[in-house]
Image 1 (cartoon, helix red, strand yellow):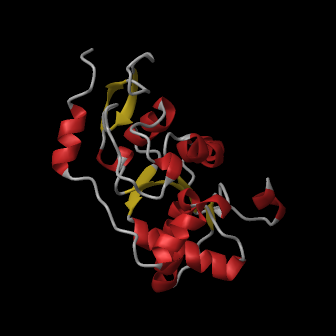
Image 2 (cartoon, one colour):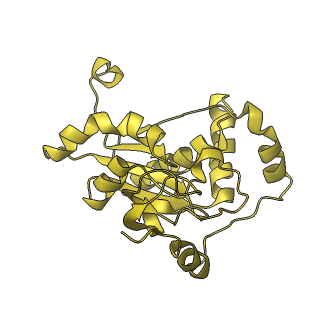
Length: 204
């Protein structure tokens, strides 16, 4: 592991989370350490417009709109959920994998929902300092990584923060143009929309 090469270990591992594959890929190797009592935080970041873990319900649901897949236990907003047209690509999925959902339910991982404009603000900061244009999905993790760093600075503590830069934003320059033009809106899922969408949950 790269961290072992520099004799370090993360205090917090952060990744964006839609269905959960990206998040699981970087955080699951740390789960055994977490279960064994290691003081490490594993944080899933999702859009406030599609807050599956932070506001969804833990229930049986289908993985697809048509309801053709077997129902499985997951955190879900309801398989009929139609997310807003936010710039978050694959993070606009109604549910999370059963494994990610169970870990969240058991309190082994955390979840945070963030708005669009602060997310792009963090993406711009990253692009200007690292010369890498991140995908909007990845920028969700960057937002929380920046927040964690600022909080550590405020507390006067040293904190090793690992986040997953899961993709570049070269195909998302239109989204960046909208942000820089002041046309990107902060969108949050309303309680009314959530309750309406949850009516689609299967009866099991």
